[in-house]
Length: 202
Image (cartoon, rainbow, N blue to C red; front, side, top):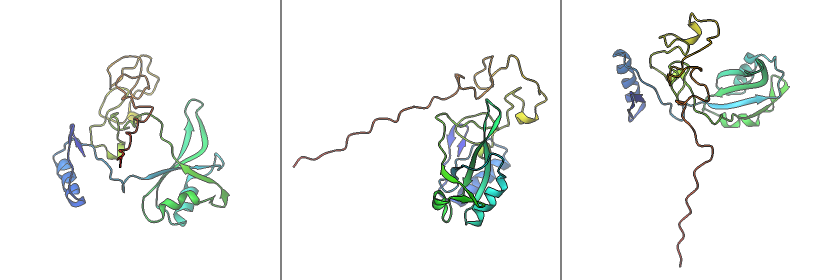
């Protein structure tokens, strides 16, 4: 977990929960880092009708023995159109690795493929920070419209802001999470070169 740029690494789950409890009691801000087991496997269900019920997907997969955290229909934000793609969070337990072998969802033919993340950092919908999600964020809530301590969806500003101010970089003309924001961390597009393997001559 991260506490104001200081990392705390508990030695076991009991100690981790104890630290979380202390931080909450002291009303301290912190960000949790998920363990590999807590991090869900993200998959995409393809080839279903665009109006397919998300609950049917969840029920169908759970009936096959998978633990499903959530199902979200993906959207083309430019065209404001729902896509025939469903993002599914699968808990890493039991037979979760077999999910890619499934070919039907509630009697419909379907294809399940790995979710490919975009080459940009995750932005938190709670504090507008980077590299973590809202469910692991215990920082003060920040509205990206007015910088108030409330969720953006609850902001009194409902109309489009003509000259917004970014709460991350302070510049005018865009909101937080804009891909051209100077505060947005840049991720490497190409992996670092692999080091040559050591060889031993006889």
